[in-house]
Length: 231
View 1 (cartoon, rainbow, N blue to C red):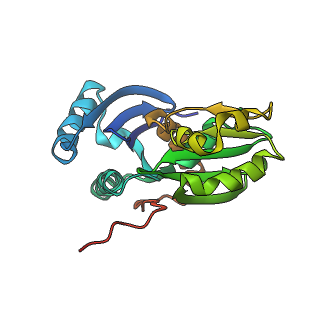
View 2: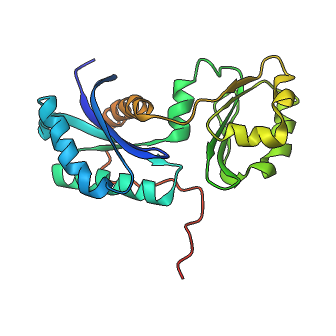
């Protein structure tokens, strides 16, 4: 594979993370915590570029997390990504958290239903259910309690792989003993997708988009949740 440099952007639950990669290898990263993202991102990015002797013209693409997540986090991440692409004419690759973890866990979750759950604040979770043939059966934001009966129905007949930082909330309602009652079920408390997951999945998607001549220069968020009402 040719050497491809990329910029990856990920807004987690507590900080905005960004890093420079050469193919799958992270060469430098930084993060911004709290509310200073808008003011600090460009100066910190410039420091990262200088540190790694990277010019903007060397960056093949920018991989950005598109959700699910909080409205503010996704708006900030994609505002930077879309502005960056417009100013530098650099292609964008959107990466959803569900997609990133599914690809990362493809071998571990083989022949199982993949149940991904991320915290959506309060008692809600972002939930995706994929069958063993990798067909997405459900993708939504739902109260954790409301997903119990469906999950019990699936786990009663098929082995499942549970992953994500929303799983502990699900366990409060469904019970870990019930999930572990099927010997082939797996509980993986991986917190959430991370910067490396975004970059790795982004590279794979970029190569596919390049091959298909379908490069993208603007991204939209995946909310899965109605925006808060303005009064």
